Image (cartoon, rainbow, N blue to C red):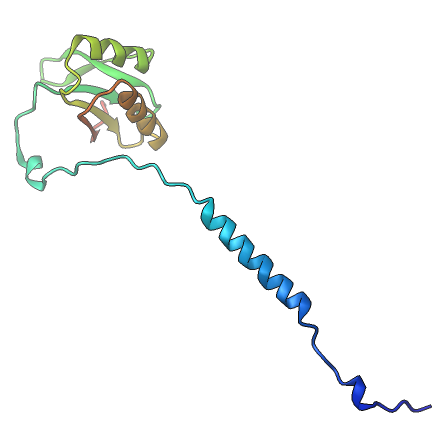
Length: 146
């Protein structure tokens, strides 16, 4: 039994499902571009490369250390060889609040983090300093105490 094709049975590609897919893609891209949120940025003032050449320490800067375990430290004195003695800070938020009340907030605050400190700990410290309205905050790495 042989079936003969007539000119009415020509093969055709249905366009309506393709047009539906194109419209769905168009709607998807429009919605995703509308929902794009503005990223929060931390304003950073980059230091002058010649500042690393200065030998003298700025005594006006209050230094808070962060060790490799994420523990916050404050300076409690100095040893005979000139090295700093560090003491633990229990709650950084309350410590910075007390520091903000006793000092001017526009004086520099410096976080001296160990090289192996988790980055999230440093960001958390920067957020707490921003909440306490410190305007000049610096971050640097320090040599861990041996």
